[in-house]
Amino acid sequence: MEKKLAGLISTYLDQLDEVNSTKYELIKLATPNNILIQFHQWANGKPVIAAYDVSKIGDERYYFLFIDWHRNDNYYLVIYAHDKSTTLAELNKIIEEDDVSFLSWKYNPLKRDGKNDIRKSYYKQTFGSTTMNIPLPNSTREIENFLDQVFKLCHNRVRADRIVDIYDFQ
Image (cartoon, rainbow, N blue to C red):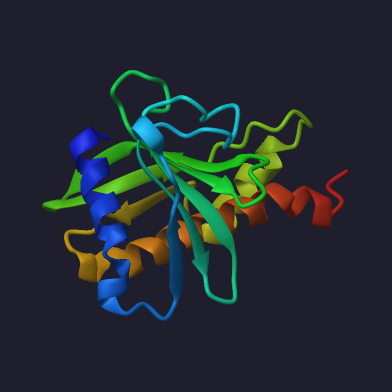
């Protein structure tokens, strides 16, 4: 996504308190000189617009980074697990449908255990498609819905990744 769009979404996140959210709490992380320091080896030193510790009250917590992930002026919303062990989603593809802009993400597991086809099949059967399109917020009022969709994406992804641990597919 363009830097300008990443900045706009982060501005809406900065204004979350203005909508009196009862669902989400957000802490903005320090980004001196617009970079992260001592966060994770994949993110340290890369240009960032903003970074947040986002928690859904009574549920999960994730880190949201608006970051030039590949240092090519193409910004991503990268979502890290709260323990920083891995990324849960790397979103940057914008699509337009009926004059609505979406952040589009596709489930594509890359585990090295030979069970990715099972995960993908489960994801598609359970959630209807391997692609999720999240409407981009056009105002601060729409940021809670955006967060709902991003948290749903992360929940679905983790659930699909773990399905092979729950059932024996031998």
